[in-house]
Length: 194
Image 1 (cartoon, rainbow, N blue to C red):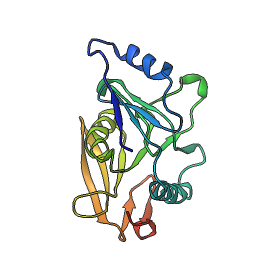
Image 2: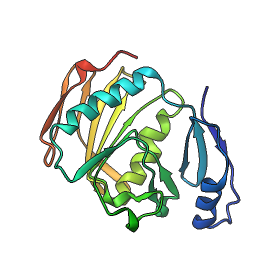
Image 3: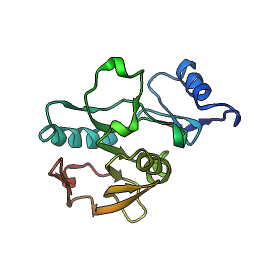
């Protein structure tokens, strides 16, 4: 199954778009995001996708401060990019829940991780990093299982405008290091093949 998009009236405001997204009944188990102003409905991630996310999450728990958390289904808002995104993993300090609605401002995140699926690879390579950089999220880790030259992992940082600088890129099987505040080496050899 591939992603489905739901067109909206281009004259609709951000608040109207979010209200529609929140109030609509979407297929159970699907991932529903707003990407560049378009509501995108994707199937639940596949097994290998989830294994990769779980292995990264396990490593991150060993280095994050006690007052930080790793979220798997947390929506983050980037209104300036017309985005309500759900990264595969989101690392952020825990906040008082009364400060937020259902979604979190993207600027609170310290790291986002996306694992590509065939149906969403373009979003994870182009649309989402532009939104994450715009929000000023310091680090973006892209696990691209479907990269043209074979599975790769790329760490992006130093956001400026809507662009990240690539900090490191490795093929599956090679280690990649996340800088401070994580100071963590992730062994991509632990990732299952596509």
